[in-house]
Image (cartoon, rainbow, N blue to C red; front, side):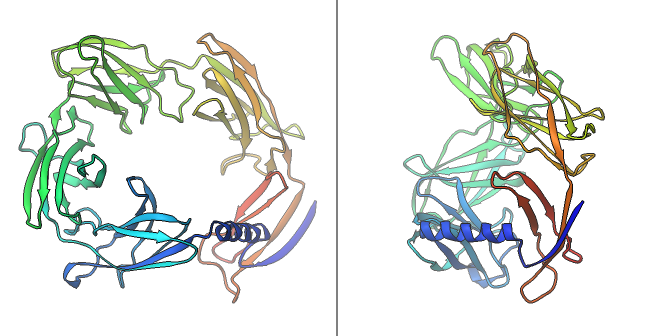
Length: 433
């Protein structure tokens, strides 16, 4: 066995090269860092969890965010590419403060200091209730501007929410359920912000259909999309996304006949959709559970080293290439594994994890391709993996430029030009790897 030992000052060679490449790409993009200082009304201490969030104009997806130092209110976000952004200071739910007014930020080839970004006092004190109109319930609240875009997206823990930091004008509010109960969105509530405080109650409505979505083994399927589609009349169409427990609830349907169907989440490309159900409303609410069908395509094989040793707990991963989807499994004590997939083109790869035995190996080949016909007929494929057992050891230490052990997580990587190799976490105690 070949043994080599070395000492890295702060970062491994691979990490250093990565930083150099990153710096080069940032320089090429000519972006900059956004800094500023968040303050609270009256100069009171900032609440823990206050963040500076960056958005693209007209979008509510967070482009980037940074924690605010509650001691002095400063934050540093980025670097971000050149462009036009909207920045907001966002306090945690329950703090008693509301969002800052939006700050327009233009980044062009350098850092930008936006100055003072003050949190605001609430103009709306709101409550979300269950359909009975009295019982508070946890929810999400969206505030829509006059053009229909989302101006704010708020959490309402235990039903309470605050709105502030918006320009004067007309808005509409809607609450959405977050609990596993047969509730639906509240009606849109118009409101005018004019500098005066006001109190608003948003009442969730009762769902018409609800239930649990599971796979063929009885496991809940989160993030599946359930559709209720009217088969006659107005052809009304409503949908909901399942919770972590597989729960869904759909309302605002009205009387009529509906087709109830579901699609798997994007990462579960191996699941086959449930057989659609036809339901007639009323009566409401109705409980209708849905079950995804078993994947009919199967890949089996073994994982063993080039010396013939079976590998236990090797992680075999299949990524679907013609659409979204990912399936994973672990090899058994004999190195055997089984993956149940759906139709389409899949790429299979294998890698070690913390429980893999033996674990000192690499898979030197590119992912292996497997294709199944686009039908629901059963198919079987065989795919064996031979991994390359390690025959060399590289050890060393990582030190900070001035000496001492890094207090943050450092990873040392060793790989070839194709990215195949190994990595190790540096010991936080003595910096060794």
